[in-house]
Length: 213
Image (cartoon, rainbow, N blue to C red; front, side, top):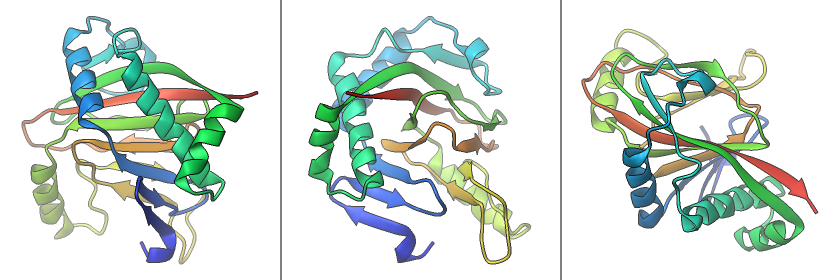
């Protein structure tokens, strides 16, 4: 990834490895705590709605606070400002001109050897927030894997777009850390690779619809 593929600003990091944009930023401690607590209190089995090969996936839509909803939608408006090439403060205009609707929200407790196959979401934007990730072990695992393959992927989320050609990759692997929030178009195909350490990755995902006023 070259510097022309990414842009830094005070609110996060924009990746442009191919056509669609992927936005990485860090969530607030308040949102982090609310999502973690809501996950502990959820009894809604959400597995029948999802593509993941995981035993523990729970619905969160009715448990998270209004403040948490507002922060997530505000980050999505920030993403849309970046799509238009506007500065971060343009998100306020985006919120006035459009209605951002938070649809499904769920939490995943991913154990060793579980995975998420290639899939896409409904809606206009989707996001994933990482609350806990065995990142140190995953880094070590990737270093070990690197000795045997040219495509280390354990513990990573991978986005794919278009076809692979000479001098042009069609994938982007990202190794997440706790508090990371990734935002991307809902139609963008992605998957999560399994890891082998006996630890639990906790992530929250959701979809957002945008209705222009």
